[in-house]
Image (cartoon, rainbow, N blue to C red; front, side):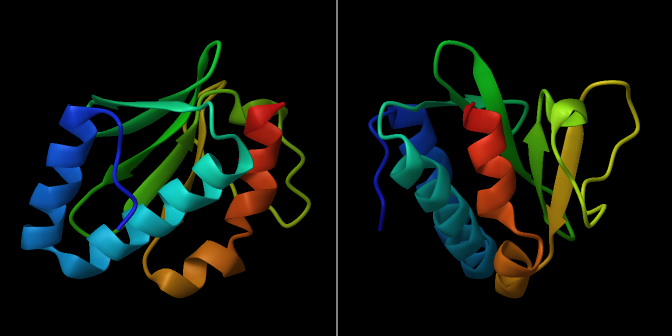
Length: 117
């Protein structure tokens, strides 16, 4: 298990593990992608999910009843040739992750790398 240096994040993950093992595993896989790309990224709990930040907020992962949403605060600037990003506002974009296959199918790493720029 990828443990977090942030106690609130670690408590959140442990709670998720007891409530929904599948969502816990997806959260861990998503965390691994972003933290492997930049180990200086910090995590914190906000709005019922995990926010990642460097010098500013990068994005966050937020579990809901039917999926996990990977939100990107500046997603409107991203290259999205396959039109995978969803949105309702002017700036923020997100990807809905319903299962492990979506992590690769929705090219999460491609978008995380853009968020880190």
